[in-house]
Length: 417
Image (cartoon, rainbow, N blue to C red; front, side, top):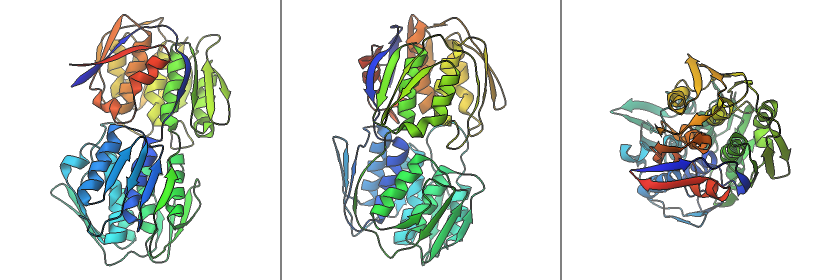
């Protein structure tokens, strides 16, 4: 077990580059199961979730190498269509192999997913949609078991614009016979990146980035070479780190259009943001004021940046109101932020944040990935020393997190507990 020790170090300053998008690359790796040739994926972040997915694909029989930001995934003649619990429990995204396995190999046995404890995130919509495509599914002894003679296109309406369900059904649909239409589909940039990846493999998909995806099935898919989009959540985290410390930070390597609502809300709070083609810089010329915000599916405010935004609002002038509409346990971080001297009260899916003059260092524990990052950002402005435990959550989604923060002037070090 490791922990991060953070000493307040003043304002952050400088430039940092966002890596490849965690929430994209894991699905691209799953999609590689359907390829008849080798897949080469560039701009891959060196994070524990990627290594976990490498283990999943390797267990199933795919030759995978990961070196200096590039994944090489070769096809295999004999695939094990099963993923055991000890691999799935680390990472929810492993459930996304269901669609590719059923589509190409006609069967799958995958343990129920794990990951962060931010909410129930049931996979009912995944299973319902796969059933509409012709798969026979059941849940037994903690495993999802599926088989199909072949998938047939269907008209699927999602009850909620679930990113995971959209991606799983999209991947299944590309090898289904006939046309598949997914309505109320998720519109996240990571879904569009998957559409581009699949299209490069020979899939026929229209509507990427909209709420309606139309897929005309093909008989087979080829290999592809693809570069992962920049991680908008990592970029937003570092922009908020700059704002929280009242510093001047530039983040590069991503599409600023993917953070439009975040830019708007940070501006409303008093941040000054300068937006370029593949970069954003932030400063805080006159302090931060309280605001209201609600998390929503893309293009709404991302739930994955809500904990970091809470930290910014902790020392804002006035009171802020934050509503979490996606995950019922996302406010688990509040008790830990309050240990640092914040004044946040929650009721159901609402948080009231009263700004305080300063925070003070204390030992805290990360309950999930984004909460862990938020606690580190809080430690940057807390007087004295802050220790953040359970940093394995942070390592799931941030590459060299403390190293990048230290390049901006932070004082963060990792040590064994």
